[in-house]
Image (cartoon, rainbow, N blue to C red; front, side, top):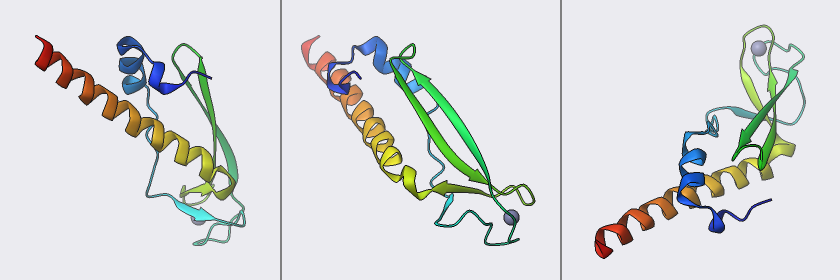
Length: 105
Ligand SMILES: [Zn+2]
C-alpha cells in the first residue's frame, strides 16, 4: 500500500474525488439485529477503489432489510479510523500544497 505522504498532487485529487465518505451517523451494533425492528441485518460489502486500485477498501456494513437503517460493523472500526485519518491527511496535505504554491509564486 502506498504511503499517503508520498502521494502526488494528481493522486491526491483522485483521492478527493473518490467517495470515501463515511456515514458517521450510522449506529454501531455488536449483534446483527436491528434495534428498531428486531430484524436480522444483512451484510453489505462496499468496495472502494482509489488510485486506480492501488488502495482498495472493503467496507462491511450491516443493513436492516425492513427499515433500511445502516449499521457499522464494530469490527470495521479500525478501517473507518484509517479512512478518516487518510481523508484528514489528504485535506491537510492539499492545503499545505496550495499554501506553498502561493508563497513560492
Ligand atoms: Zn430495522
